[in-house]
Image 1 (cartoon, rainbow, N blue to C red):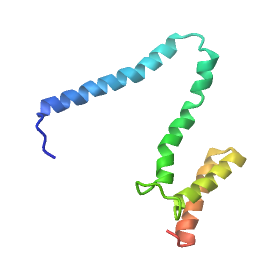
Image 2 (cartoon, rainbow, N blue to C red; image 1 turned 135 degrees about the vertical axis):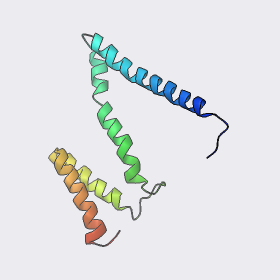
Image 3 (tube, rainbow, N blue to C red; image 1 turned 90 degrees about the vertical axis):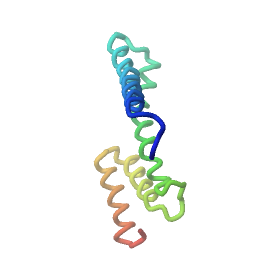
Length: 114
């Protein structure tokens, strides 16, 4: 795709945005490294960051695998529900992954729905 910007301008934008992103991310590491006692409210809020990031990464692939929300005929959604149930009762990450993948494979290849 042709653009009216030169190569130097494009690389300058890439470098500036990379430095800005690195600065923002490293500032949290730097600041939290200097704080001796993190307030309980902040500590409790930080506990929810990994599950929120995981949900933000996986939910679109489960609910909208083709780019639009699909409920009927969505095998990934059914396998995700199975994996969620296993995670709820077993509380083991490996068992959750295996159950979700086995459910998806059985639905897709075993039952021939996919």
